[in-house]
Length: 217
Image 1 (cartoon, rainbow, N blue to C red):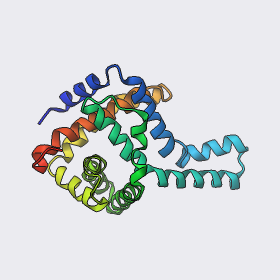
Image 2: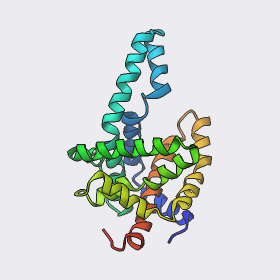
Image 3: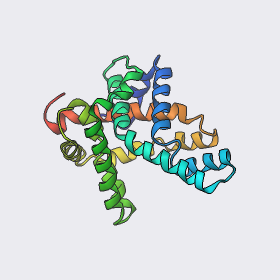
Image 4: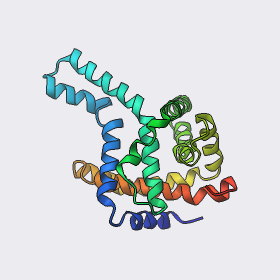
């Protein structure tokens, strides 16, 4: 298996000449799933509506509902785009929306992953992190096997990540410097980090799948 350094080098090589589309895909995915939810949504509502609490809460609730509905298909599409990139495909913005024809499956996959991770996190933060790592390959697996159901994708991810969770955790930690740079540059650094990270994780999946699952896709 490849070293984390090699996976990151591969990601940068695959992004060469494709940064603009990779950034667009990453930003749109973020806007649709995270940008207007939680505290960010409340702050936006406060600014626009002059701290009108009822309107503020309504805005945040609507944003959270939209995020819940689209996160599964969008995360599937994000995996599709960067998986294609790792396989030397050109990729397009259409890839980001490729999960909507499988809306039922991708929506349920997102909900199940969220619920299972939350239940493990109730035990303490560390079990929650382990659960998130365990389920992290589900969208990639469903991309390669769109015929399977959400639970099967989760089970296959658990199998794939057996003995590999610490490796993925350390790979994620290796991006902490870029994350901090993104904060101190008021988000500009994330335009580089998001494609770089997603492309690296796609390569991580590609590196794992054949020896762990016993066949290639």
